[in-house]
Amino acid sequence: ALRAAGRLYRRSGLSALVRRTGMVRAFPRLDTLERLLPEDAGIATGALPEFIPARGRPRGRVALLTGCVQRHVYGDVNRDTAQLLSLAGWDVVVPRGQGCCGALELHAGRVDALRRRATALASAFPADIDWVVTNAAGCGSAMREYGHWTSDTGVTRLASRTRDVTELLAEAELPLEPLPQTVTYHDPCHLAHGQKVREAPRALLAKIPGLTVVPLVDSELCCGSAGVYNILEPEMSERLLAQKIERIVESGARTVVTGNAGCLLQIASGCRRRGIDIEAVHPVTLVARAVRWEAS
Image (cartoon, rainbow, N blue to C red; front, side, top):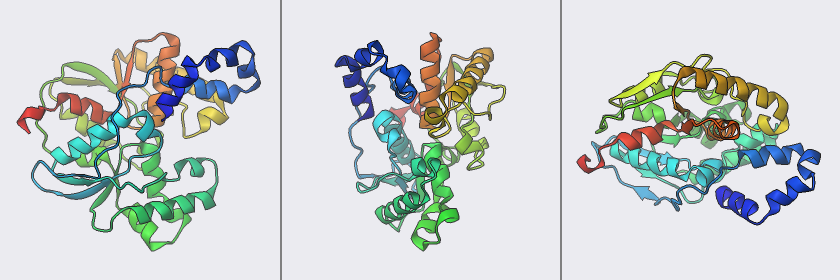
C-alpha cells in the first residue's frame, strides 16, 4: 500500500539518505513524490466486502470503483462511500477483479494502454447494475470519456453508467445530526470541468445541519495536481498550489472539502509543508461524520 510504503520509506532511513546525498536535487520528481506522501498510515480499513446490502428504502444496485490511489491512500473514503450508499438504499457490489480505470495512462497520453484498462474494467463489473459509482473525480472523468477512445459496446455502456458518489447521495435522505463546522469547497477540475458536476457536492454538503460552507474564491481553478502534472511540471504546479492555499486561508475555513484523491493529496501536502493547520477531506467523510448511525 502507498501509505505503508511511504511509512517504511521514511522509517528505514532511505528518505534521510536521499536528501543527505543530494539525490533529490538530481531527481526533482522524486522530491515531488516524497512531498505528496501522507505523514501517517491513517486508518487501516482492509478490503471491503464484495457485497453490502441496502439498509434504507431500496433504490437499486450499484458497483463501487475502489480505484488505485483511492484504495491505498484513502481507504476510509471507500469505506464511507460504501456505507453511505447502503444507507441511502443501494445494494453495493465491490468487484474483486477490478483494476485501474486508466486515468493515469490517459494523463500520460498512452491511449492504447487506456483502452486495455477500459476493456478489462468493463469485464470486471456485473451487467445487472444501475450505476458504477466513483469517489475520485479523475477516475470518473476518464471513465465518462471512454467513448472518445473506443467504440467497444461494453466499455461505452460502462461510461454511460458512471456517476460520482455525490450525485447519488445528494438525492438521498440520510439521518444526519448537526455538524457545527465551517468549511469551504474546492472544485476538482476533473469533476467540475471534466464531468460538469458542480452542484451535487454543494447540495450534499448543504444537507448537513449546522455545517457552514463559505465561498472559495476561484474555486474552479486548478490546485496544481491535475493528474500527473504535479510530477511532470512541479514548478508550475507549485505556483498553482500556492494560489489555491492562499484562497483557502482567505476563506477563513479550517477545513477544505474536495472530491478527488489528487487534490486531497496536493492540498494536504501543501498545507503541511507550510505549517498551515487546515484539514483536507472528501465530501463523504463529512457526511459520514454527521450520520446518526444508530438511527439507521
